[in-house]
Image 1 (cartoon, rainbow, N blue to C red):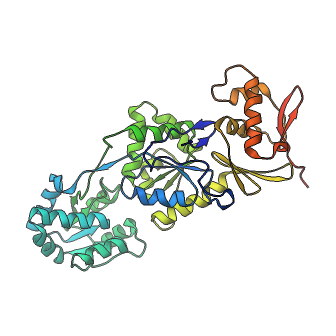
Image 2 (image 1 turned 90 degrees about the vertical axis):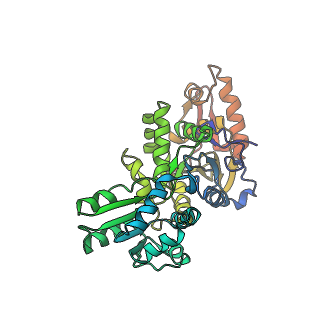
Image 3 (image 1 turned 120 degrees about the vertical axis):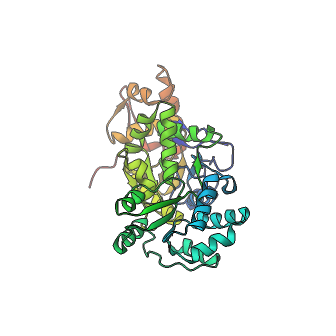
Length: 398
C-alpha cells in the first residue's frame, strides 16, 4: 500500500488497518471528501475506530498512534478504596463526568460485591451529571440526577457548586483519568473536602511504536493535523517527545506547521500550557470535531490560478479544477517551493535543496519535475525557464 505524502515526506504507517490510508483515497477522484489530500493524526485509544472511520469517510488519510491505554477497572485498587469510602461515609455531592466512567464504576462495584451499596449511597446524594450521555448512564443505573448543565461544561458544574456553597461539604468527583485542572483546587479553596474517584486510569501504551511513528510524522510535517480527544493523550504525546529529546521540536511543529484540534477545552489544556494554538468545536463530540477539521484544513490550503486552472495544494495531493491528483513526495517538495514564490523563477539549485535525499545531481530535479507534471495531469502548469529554472504559470491578476 502506498503511503501518504506531505512536504516531501512519506508517512510510514502502521500496517494495522487503522494506521494507514492511501492517498489515492480508493474513490473516484471526482467524489473526494472535504479532507481528501490531508493527513490527520489520531491519538485516541477509546473510540479510535469511530473517529478514524469518520475521518476516512471524508477522504482523510489517517496515522493512528494511540497515546494511552486504560487500566482495567476491576484491577484498580484505588477505585475500590474510593467506592468503599463513599459507601461507608456518604458524601454530600457526587459529580459524574463521563458516561463510560460512570457505567464502569457501577459494573466494577457489582463485580466486587458492592453494587447495591454504591447505588444506595448515590440515591442519598446530590448527583450532578455532566451532559446528556452521563445523564443516560445515571438513569440506566436506576438513579435520577439532581441537575445537569445545558452546556455539558465542567466549568458550569463548578459555578453551580460554588454558587450554592461547598464550605464543610464532601464532594466526590469522578475523574477522567487524571485530576481535572483547577476544578479540585477551586472546590478545596472554597472549603470543600474532595473525594477523587479514579474510575479509569490512563497509562502510556505498552507498544510505543505507533505513537513514535505519529510523533515522527509531526516532526517531519507529514501530518496536517492531530486530533486530541483527551487531556491525558495530549500530555502523553508531549511526555513521549520529552523522553526522546524532541519535545521542543514537537511543540514548535504544533505551534506553526501542524494543526492541533481538541474535542474540548479541558483536552486542550496541556497544549495551551505550551502556547500551542488549539481549535475546538462548539459541541464537544467526535462529529463536530471532524466537521471542524473539514473547515479548518481546506481553509489552510494554498489555492492559486495557474495556466487557466484552479490549483489547490493540500498535504499530499493537489486539486486541479476540483479533481484530486495524488502527488509523490519529491513532487510535493518541488510544488511547495514553487507555490511559495508563485510566478517567480525558482532556480534548479534551490529546487534541488528542497528535494528529500537528492544529493547534488541537478538531473534529479528534472526527473522529479517530469513526474510532478505527469501527476498533475496539466503539464503547462509549470513552465521551464531555459538556463534559469522553473516557475508556476500564474495567471495575471485582472
